[in-house]
Every structure is written in C-alpha cells, then in structure tokens.
Image (cartoon, rainbow, N blue to C red; front, top):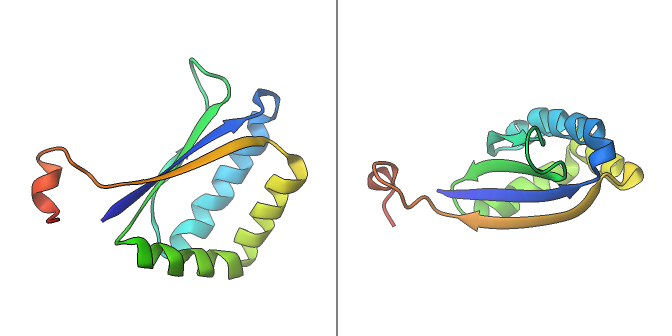
Amino acid sequence: MITCFIRYEIDPYKKDAFIEYARNWGQAIPRCGADLVGYFAPHEGSVSTAYGIYHLPDLASYEAYRARLKDDPLGRENYEFSQCEKFILREERQFLKIASAPHAELIKP
C-alpha cells in the first residue's frame, strides 16, 4: 500500500474555491479507484497550506487511477476549475509507505 500526500500552497483569499475543489475530489477520487483519506483546508496556523491524502495499492494502480480520473467528467471539470480560478499556487506530491507500528505489521514489504 502506498499513500499519496499532496501539499498545496493556496491563495489564502481563495480558500472557499479550494474547499469547493476538495469537495469535488471527494466524489471523483473514490469513484476512480483510490481510497481517499481526505482533503484538508487551512484552519489554524498557516492560512495557505492545504493537503490531499489518499491510498492506492502500488504505483501501477496509481497510473491506472490517474487515467480514469483524466476521463472522469467531474475530474476534468475540477482540474479546469483550478486552472481557471488559480487558487493553487504550488502543488507537491509525495508517495509514502507506512512505517509505524502497529500499522506496519499489517503491511509486508
């Protein structure tokens, strides 16, 4: 199992647009095959950092998921919404494997 962590730097004056974007992914991502943990918007502290987190079995599954997401009507619409509204200033994606116990005992390398 891999976990995709997406760190966003967003325009703090467009937080509501990011929240709409996150809600749309809340529908599209599970439909396209990823196990969505959630999208997180700023609340306290930084007003410009947000996150998206989801799980997939492996990188091959990620590639298949991305292809489905690209063909998904809401996925395409949401991407276009982000491009048009420009509330995402920067996006950084990392793939991690869980290493903590007891969770790590459930996942074999």
